[in-house]
Length: 148
Image 1 (tube, helix red, strand yellow):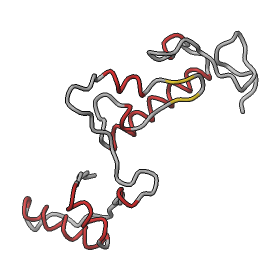
Image 2 (cartoon, rainbow, N blue to C red; image 1 turned 90 degrees about the vertical axis):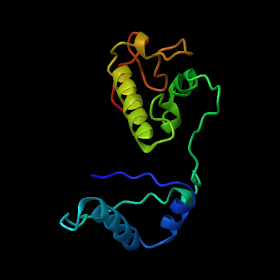
Image 3 (cartoon, rainbow, N blue to C red; image 1 turned 60 degrees about the horizontal axis):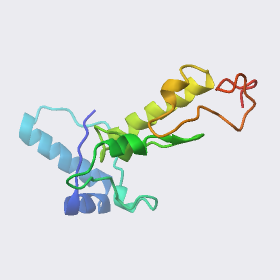
Image 4 (cartoon, one colour; image 1 turned 135 degrees about the horizontal axis):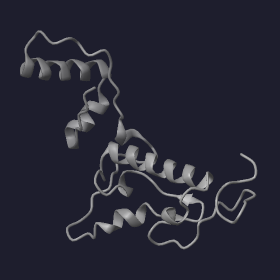
């Protein structure tokens, strides 16, 4: 798997063209680097990020002087509302893998709470409750008496 991040005007040009044209361009760059003997790619996936109506090409980009604890706070939860995404990952903010890793972290946190494992460690930096309030609970923290 090869991942390329393209930004600015080049990203807009690539999003506007047919995916097969993009694949041809990528293969030409790779062949210039590694020679004509490399195999063709078996497929591509292009996000067309600027065309997504929910994000319109946006990503987080902290300004100079930003307290990097901001990412930790964005990853906090409010009762049963958990936040994830590239902006909520302290190392990979602004990148797809930040969204992926942040999602895995939130999913593991939620699973741990449902299984009533380590409630105190999953409170987050600005929260004082360890609850999953919309399902019946035992002992006030986590494990529901039925699985929804």
